[in-house]
Amino acid sequence: MTLKPIRWVGPAREEIQSLPEDARKEAGFSLWTLQQGIQPPDFKPMSIVGKGVE
Image (cartoon, rainbow, N blue to C red; front, side, top):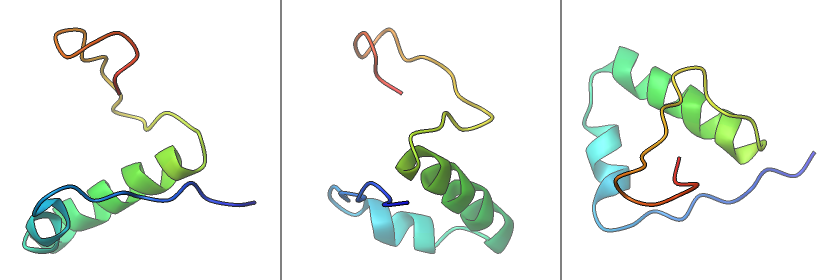
C-alpha cells in the first residue's frame, strides 16, 4: 500500500515533535490512518472551516 504524503505547513512538524511522547504517538497514529485514507478514531468534522475538512 502506498501512503499519502504528509505536507507540513509552517512549524507544524516541529510543534508535534515538541509534544510529550504520548501526544506524539497519538498524533502519529492519526496521521498514519489519514495517510491510508482511513478516518482517525477521534475524527470530528470542522464545518466552520469548510465542507469536507478533516
